[in-house]
Length: 585
Image (cartoon, rainbow, N blue to C red; front, side):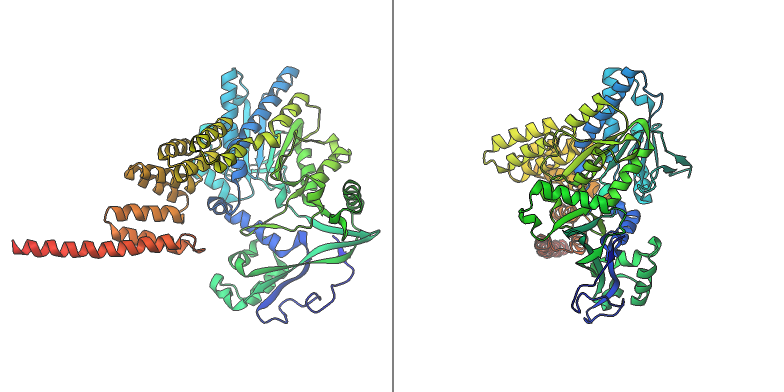
């Protein structure tokens, strides 16, 4: 770990005792700490373990970029190519072992298995029958959710659910039995999607020979009197927990997350004893050589994003695969020197801290032969323009498999359907827009998020509820379990076609996934108001107001509430009039 050689000058930056602050509106929980070890990072790890399923449901964690089916088709292609290459060499094992680390919702793995099964059936090979698949996550809630929703029911007999910590990747613990397996040397395809970005990073800047700065973090509790609003813990208890900080005791911080504030500063540090100093200098030299000494990004020094956690874990993953196996990596990544030269810290997804992986660093490390066991990284034809990087880590030469990976995970090809959709949004001609949507869906027929956005466009901008309904119906066939938005759009298209009962069922399906889905609550309230059931509508609108904390839908909610109140009065007066007339009879 780097050590500070001097504190920043001035009272705002000086070292302080936790709990003491010149500002009465905040209280210091943790003094200056390296970015890779700060309190917020540790809180995020706990939040993931305990609440990951909820974070996916409300899309706090943006999982759609790999759970949409697009990448799954390519993963299945890669696995099929590997099997074909092994078959041709006479080395295809009787048991083909696949493991996904950090499966999240599990949709990527489910779609991969669907596609691989179908292709094997179409070509008459028995490779799917040989599969043994480990679906893993560090979160118990995620694994249980997959069981409860029957996510892998179509692949019974092939999938085993369990726990695996990416920082200890050789140990698998089965969910139902507690059986522990040593995976070393047994895995043929190891999938690690959006896992490395959750590992520790450090951010350095080289100012000159032997002169470095590092980003450190100081953590505050803002407005301590508000703590009781969020947690039963006291301020003194938080201070004690921040000192010890075993993972099990960080829940009060997660509860009071909106009160946590981070302060980042670059400190001069002494790196003479840092174990990675040579690597840091190599990275800085490469930046300066590529960008040129007069580049504006180097004006204040050379930034080095040190993805130490990702580099260490990638090598651990490569060490546990079979000799002919492979590790498929996809993550948010820095793939250009310009990207890597810009200072950056963690990105926030709710409580979760993530940082783009310095893919340039990984490429250089493995490309220069410094990784053990002959590991090397294979890059796709292009990384694309959207910051999503894919790499294949292998230990033996797999020319056909590597070529399939390079083509299948070409970033430009992966993004092609999205670009067609974006063109459909921009065009003013409805017929052209519909044709572009058709082309996009034809390129990625299993991408349910593309179907979702296409349905929205057809309904809201093109005035074609019939098209929206057809597209949304296909989307819920692909993903009936994890998107309240999807069911809501289907409900909207059904309602626009006058199919109110079917629309109500769709909205209820969405609320079964996410009970606090505000738009579905509003839509149901509208349907109930149409039926004259104002008491039910009031209850639904009350829930919608409660969950619409950002106020995004408040105007529509209040407008519908006012309409219901007026209609209720009219309804009541009509009822009273009928009763009066009844008495006259």
